[in-house]
Image (cartoon, rainbow, N blue to C red; front, side, top):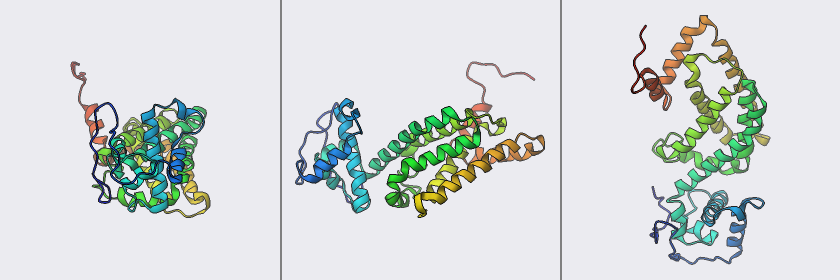
Length: 288
């Protein structure tokens, strides 16, 4: 989907590389802004020199876009402005990101990748479910902290169910599945004994809880997002206690009802439930 403020695309010269057409507008590859954008776009340390040139260009465009979104606002930033500040052609910008929405998807992917890497220490060290959950959530807040000031600009678009920026959109599927997989690892690596009825539903529910935390964080103006951090810790404690209580037989009817609720309404859970009921192809149905 092309944003109304963006410029016409420049067709790619070939399938194996970015377009070589020059930008229609005045590019300023040697301007101070372009030099700053190029510097910002470089990955810290020596990693930039090891990255393929195409990946360096993609990173440069994304870094420039994030800076302009912060300085000018999401709606007021055009693809032409991003290309000019990055010192690349408009066609090059569209080659790597077909719209501003896809730039934000690139931002989602970056946050997710950094979060998973930073959470590794907690996941390798902790086996207590509460500690694992709280650690992973607070690490996300640390990773996302530099983008807090302009996060609300993204949220007003992400809140639209028809927007590709929605966490439930087809465009967000990759980032969503990676986030749910991380929550699955949080659960699987803990000492907690999870009832079978909840084993499939919990990781997705934990991801939904994380999305709720993100919404609270967007509008949290406390110093260092202190209130959101407290919410993450208390929510993790409550969830861990709920999982522990779910083991008791007297609560099994409630657990089954919760599972049915999740299976019906959580994204993807209906498919998981159906796959577990259907016998694998080529295998006989077990007899009682």
